[in-house]
Length: 179
Image (cartoon, rainbow, N blue to C red):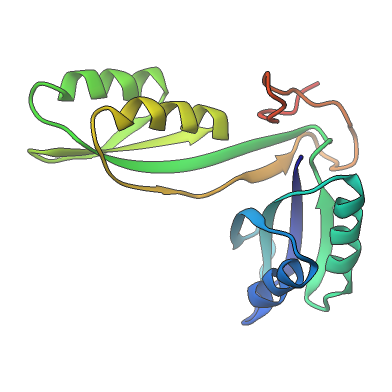
């Protein structure tokens, strides 16, 4: 089961290494890791996705709290949360395929951020499932290069601990947690 943690840490050198080392030492593979600044100066936010069961999730959470630069850990997997990913995909585009690719970008609510004579870069945001589907369709046109942020997460509402319900796609992948 994919488990998502939102971890607030002190924004200083070496913190990312310490957190990643904890997962390595415990034998967990990080499926996705996104790090960025928060609205609070000096605080960074990590969204970490690992495949583990409930017992492993409790172990991860307890061990994260043992790290000095960790300020808070929120296990958001079963909370009402929004999960998103950003992808930029460079695909071969000639005069014949360009209209189809523009249409695909539009259908997936993506946007074209660069066009050249022989290529196009499409930017898309959404669930991992949505991004995967777009990538699958674009493979037929020749993906030249791709980058993805990995999952980022934010709980809904004004308090992180208000809810438990979640919305999942068939197959169990959490996309958007909702009321």
